[in-house]
Each structure stands twice: as structure tokens, then as C-alpha cells.
Length: 53
Image 1 (cartoon, rainbow, N blue to C red):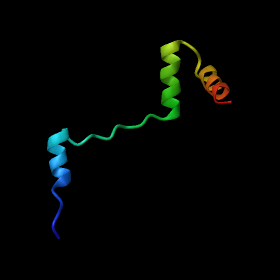
Image 2: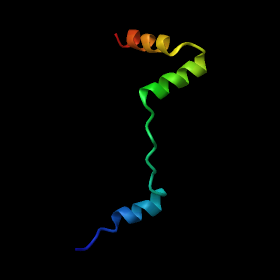
Image 3: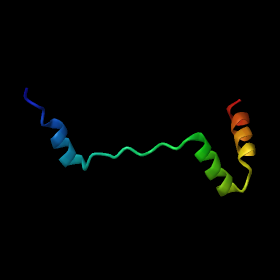
Image 4: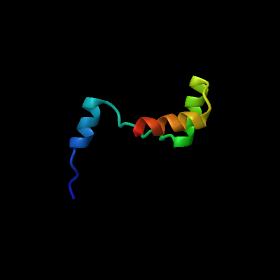
């Protein structure tokens, strides 16, 4: 079966294939917010719930 060269040509035109980044879990995001803002993770979680409502 012939393979299309279009994806290969696109790779040379637009750069390399993009690597998949590891997505962060919700707990990791809360922990980062806790360190960044100096607020307990429970407070950040509750604020997120209030913002959604």
C-alpha cells in the first residue's frame, strides 16, 4: 500500500512532531496554587467551586 508523503512534508515545513506533554492532575494543580499564593489547598478548592457556581 502506498503511504502518503503529505504528513512527512508537513513535518519539514512546520517543524518537528509535537511531543505530548504530561497533563497535571487536579491535586498537582492545587498543590502548585497553594505554593504560589500561600493559601491552603482546601481554600483554593472551595474558591474554585464558588467560581464555577
